[in-house]
Image 1 (cartoon, rainbow, N blue to C red):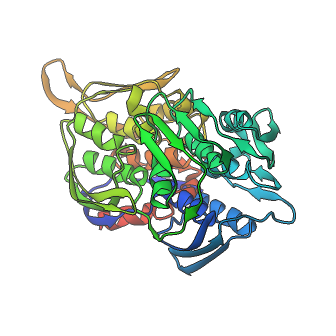
Image 2 (cartoon, rainbow, N blue to C red; image 1 turned 90 degrees about the horizontal axis):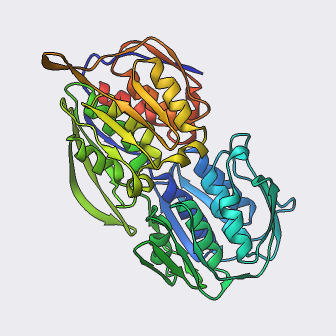
Length: 437
């Protein structure tokens, strides 16, 4: 599918409610499926990845029913049952494959996790290696899916992770629920902590301090879960509001977990006009509304180190935002972008260059040279030429970032493969339409 995007002739105005957080939706289904009792999950994600998790646990014998389009009822006795063929598809979802590996490694049955062509190219050694240290028996194709998992009795370990990854950390913690003794994960910097918050909410003996998390074998007690809006989805609207002239709107019900809200901090460092209102807590997660206003004179910044785990998924849209800031924005320590649905560094640089963004590839990130003033000073030059067809490489976040860039290009752009946005954000265009009326 090719999507044509024209420059907006009017500002973005009004109010939208952002869809539910995918990371939390995944975990709500997984954890409720291994908890004892009945759980109502409200505001479940409509994204394909989260439905891959849901369908997998149905195959594992969990009673999951839709009460309405976004409300689930899950009834479980805390145990899983193998499907007759023992093969479970994770679709395109790396979160599903990596986290479920930790759950299945300690079961009393064997299983096989498969994925689509894209997922089968993504690295799984990062979860296989710590699970094997815990006593798991897992075979793969050179560290890639399909993963054949022979259920075993596991033992707790202390694991120092080489990278700050919520998926790696969560996989190990979930394996630790069924392991002998306690399990500790140490990260170089703190990754997103949705797993820790939800496990604690469901009664698990888990403690977090700085970059260390310790878990003891525990049974989960089912509780109702309300899922907040997805900050990663909100990021596209935040960027659009800052760069489309005259824009002023509110994004409702957005998750503001400090381990995920790096985009807010970066926007503030760049001088973006953004305001958090109605801050409160829902099912253990911080949530609030975000007011965004067009900002003419944003400044560049450096994004590195501990920033990266808090906004890794937002870096493509930050590149678009940086094109409209004065000066040179540097992103580094983000080499893991090369292991996403695409090599996001290479693909991002190649495609944004086509529409006039001055962006340079680096091994662990990129440099965006944004607006500049003429020799005599004066007004900042901010035009993007557009007029090109961009490839999204089966990567939903690239497709949506290109869409936002197209809103300020002088000439119409075309995005090839735009249907991949359905993977994570089916409502994407509809919400932009509401703000454009």
